[in-house]
Image: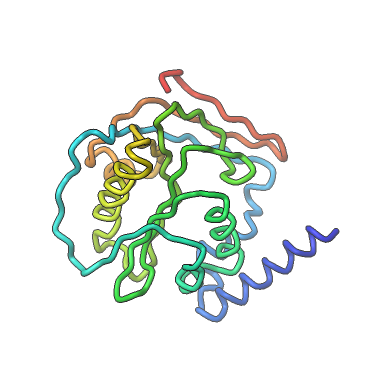
Amino acid sequence: MRNTATKLWRVWQDLLFFARRRQLFSPETWQLIPVSRLLYHKIEYTIFAYPLAAPLPSYTPRLPIVYRAATPADAACFRQIQSPSQVAYTLQRLNHGRNCFMALHEDKLIAFAWATDEISFNLDNLEMRLSPGDVYIDDVYTAPDYRRLGIQYPMHIEQLRYLQNHKSGKFKRAIVIADVNNAPSQKMIRKFGYQEIDRLVFKRVFLKRTFRYQNGLF
């Protein structure tokens, strides 16, 4: 009962958050209550890999941006662009040891992406095998006002550079996934130099979830 009350309270806080920003009917808001996907949901992902030993592309920044890893002390930055429940989830992941790489413009958080070498269904809502040396990059986000400005490409380069040097070269291969129907993401990932290594099909029928690799190459 307590967990239900907590979830309802977070939904209410999120609705107030979007209402204050006049985004009550935005896609982000409706993701809070995915009514159309309660009974059945299926999505197919392409799994890509990139060797961290490979040279990274160069880039010319359009904006003066500071790139760095996030810490729990950055909660105020995330509150600028995330709803209360999203901020709570962000802090949960940071406190659990997940790596979050941020892009800041004029001290304002404008984009971020997560990375981990340990996927937990309870924390990541995903089942996927990782080999030793793999680091999985996910939940890439850009603030609406900074989209279509070429923010993600240089941020990804700097995130990979950070991962190359993190923990004395522990990470050897970056893994990303993209919805097969998300043409912009597919195009950017392939342009960067990632190679497709497998497909992952996620299916949920009511409360039962299944994850299936399509060709077993991963």
